[in-house]
Length: 148
Image (cartoon, rainbow, N blue to C red; front, side):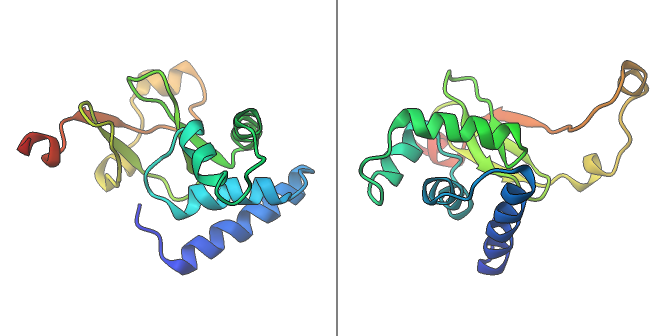
């Protein structure tokens, strides 16, 4: 999703509040990891986050990134975007949206689907139990890859 400076600031403030409410300390490392997810729209992997954050915090370990992302995910602060590749990608929790993933280059794009989002779930799912989240991941080939 395209985030304005104002919405990015709101996400960072909501993050700090959610951490305090969950009893999580707002450490410099946690703030840097979350900030990177808010400021970049590319849904980075843990390894990509590690490379980016090492520029500001050279001593941060990949293990710290993985543990922090797991903690964030456990507390509902980040979403894991699973792809057909083995590495998960991450994004800061924001407004509801769906993803389309290029099967050639791996680029992930957020999109809204208002018609789907305003529809009721099929009866089978409501009879199954409680559905907490529902989103679509579409796969295809982006225009850049089609041109090559």
